[in-house]
Length: 175
Image 1 (cartoon, rainbow, N blue to C red):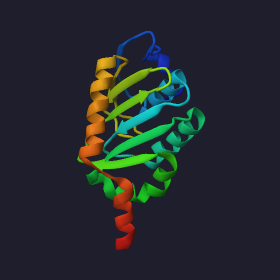
Image 2: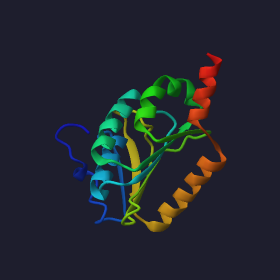
Image 3: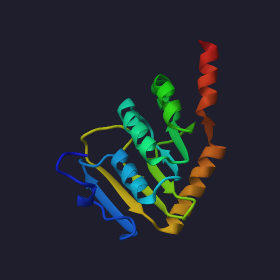
Image 4: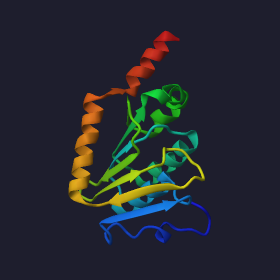
């Protein structure tokens, strides 16, 4: 987030608004995730889909997770970005519990606190990278939206992806 800016300049607390949106070059995906986890507390399950991920995002994510302690973190990346992902794998493996590869271009963030049922869906334009471009997102706490997206995400993971650990193990055997 840029200096002299707060997330409150763009979004209200999740309990205040069921659906919100933004279009700005100020907010990053990491800002949104951190904001959600602070509202939901520890023990959340996090699901993220993206085309690409960067080392800079992973560094930020490492500290967000360390502070907020999600219980599970699932990430779906695109198969076309595999070479870049392989280079980041040692770091990814330290930060994220489960990584999958699929024909994926979606940018989706789902967070649920299983203990109290809080949930939020964020449909966004930004990859898990850092930039100064304008990005947009719709943030929703609507139960039906979350249930639909989670069902489809679980289908993507179960039926249309490859666990990244398998791809990485195969690559090591080839080298």
